[in-house]
Length: 103
Image 1 (cartoon, helix red, strand yellow):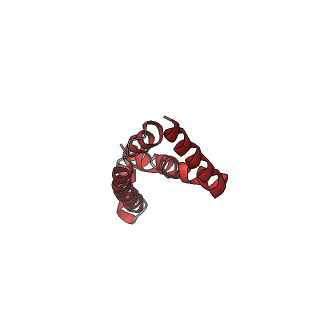
Image 2 (tube, rainbow, N blue to C red):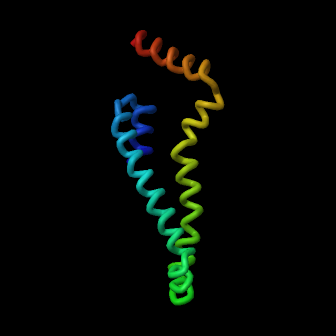
Image 3 (tube, rainbow, N blue to C red):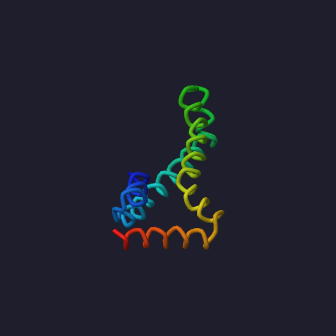
């Protein structure tokens, strides 16, 4: 939902930035829950559980990859704009404003 709000704002021009920021809280909650689950997995009781249920233990370890992908997909737009620079961002915004004025 969060990426859909961002895409709608960027491509269609719908003002969905406020829901985008509100949904950011859900990302924070998910990351915290995943970190707590991984800490529990590698704790003393988690080691005992891993020997009894190896499938669950593997699942918790494999969840590290989606965490990294989630962090990249959530911040790649900001990283791209940071790499392009402030001048480029201003130029793109000004071009879009001029296009809207002509219509």
